[in-house]
Length: 306
Figure (cartoon, rainbow, N blue to C red):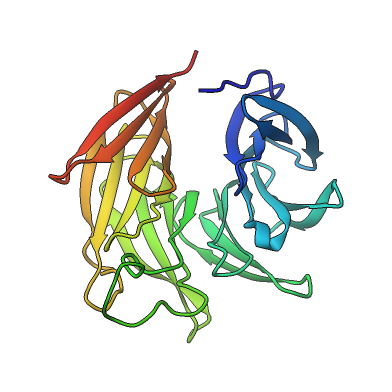
């Protein structure tokens, strides 16, 4: 394990590697985003991005097919999209669609397009799409009664479609579906409906007794969908939905498995293969969980910060 220290002047809230694992973007309460070049066990600061007027909570890399593009979410209510051109970083766009802190940003799977979902303490989600001519399309809607703390996209292909031998092929462009977590203790699933031109609520998952701090949708080639939600109530819930014969996930039947922790749980993150879940909490520990053959989740690793 490589440890990077003294990266910022204040608390670091997020750290994300790009698609190739060669660049690391970090963001902090010092209002900056820093980009490091990673090579083996060494790291080199290549850029410090300044533009936010408050703590920066989260960053997200776009797929490299759209260029070197990074989005950032801040307490100042802004989402800034940064782009590197000819080795120089600058603002591609600045969006001020929210009336409160923007807590989470995530780019959609590349099959969907250059589409960015943003979750805010005003309870709303904005979905921003970068068009080929440089213009942006915006969808803004109320997602949670109180604040919206996290957003995560589903894989563009239906679960199990890669290994299915029957049924129709995945739709061109992929499925536009994402999950949100709110201060109303709820997890909600949203899907794009092209007929009405907006995102509609597909399912509401109840199980937490306090704020949902993070959500993550697992990549999977299995005929199952997995969503993990982390909460202030000291639990992580793993929600699973089995794919119907049509190849579409059943929106109404989500089974839940509850993992208990000794402190508040802040973040959840799936491995690239979708078979391992990393959980970080207020006890300064990162635990890794895997599902066994009986369908139970077992702790396989514990990392404690120094």
